[in-house]
Amino acid sequence: MKFAVIVFPGSNCDDDMVYAVQEGLQEEVDKVWYTEESVADYDAILLPGGFSYGDYLRSGAIARFAPVMESVIEEAQKGKPVLGVCNGFQVLLEAGLLPGAMQRNKDLKFICRPVELKVDNNETGFTKSYEKGESIIVPVAHGEGNYYCDNKTLQHLKENNQIVFTYQDDINGSVEGIAGIVNEKGNVLGMMPHPERATTSLLGSSDGLKLFQSILNHWRESHVLTS
Image 1 (cartoon, rainbow, N blue to C red):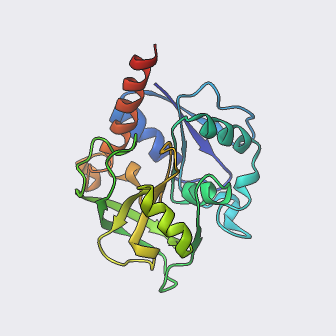
Image 2: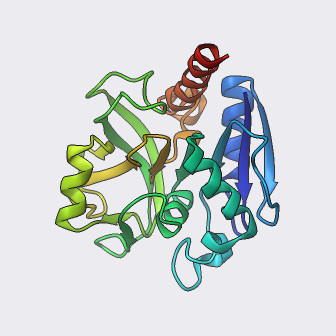
């Protein structure tokens, strides 16, 4: 399996994401610069955290128009797995690949610490290695992680089982404690916590590794079934 890690000006978690794939999965991974025009040769696309374009204007709003994003959107629409973490999540929201928007944290402070998450949906290609309802420890590092959507959208997310992770405590004011959601097809996941920073006990938690293992296992199952 071959992964692409998209790098925008201001990305700062790209190397962490590469480490998670190389060391955690022993799979092939390339960093892909934002000016590239195609990611069609990759099996999975990862949008890392950071401050794309300095987060000027609005987080992820400028990165959404980077040349590479047209191909990212095309591959997502084809069903290829796309994971956006933190700023990557914000880019996916701005690109319209996921519903809702992101606001400043409720206390207007930047939060950087491990938090406890609940796995609400373990039926996606990103979470099959977890147990439903499992409690995991994954760090956050954000100032604009307060997920918002209107009531109609929230109801739709619930009815389609698109809420994947929720915070055990209200750390940032997110609607219903939402920490991560998938699109209707289940192939695009956005989450504010950083699973790539929780892939080994040396980092304080290895709970994030199961997410990357889920992507790999799901791809292998799909490849065997379709080949």
